[in-house]
Length: 211
Image 1 (tube, rainbow, N blue to C red):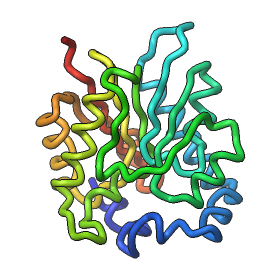
Image 2: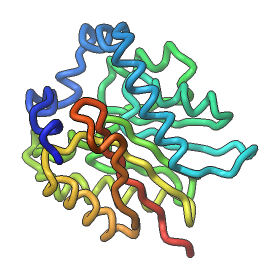
Image 3: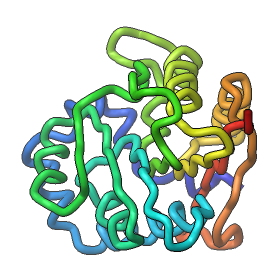
């Protein structure tokens, strides 16, 4: 089931994201039409899975916003986005688009938005970077705990988070869901195109417990 995820290119194993996504890499990423189309489709799917009320603008967190594709999708739905990313080069690309407001930060160290600020959250192709130790040798469990603690705190009661990722194996996926549950976020995994070796996509769909 995870065969395609194990065999695909793994940039997160080459070093920290802020090092991998240099200015040159960020520009190459932004110019890759096919990659941007894939990211856009995944962001659209994530926003759909948030199940936001129709006709009511919402404030959405994009964790690991990268070049801002997710923010453009959020805006096309009539919502507002605040994006967080550790790569300054990718944020500079995002700032040149209509992606919304973006700021620099390491999602693996948590973030300090006001409690209950967001009506939903998405993350596209970013969470797998937390499944390996960082440069300071903070283990995945610690990084995931910091992320999900912050995420749970900044979501309003009953709000959803949809996190698309490329897990290497079932253990990674189980770890993500288990740590999220410890932080008061409950849900499961949605797999799109499960029988396709190329189109298969994994989404962790979580909801903050209602007060």
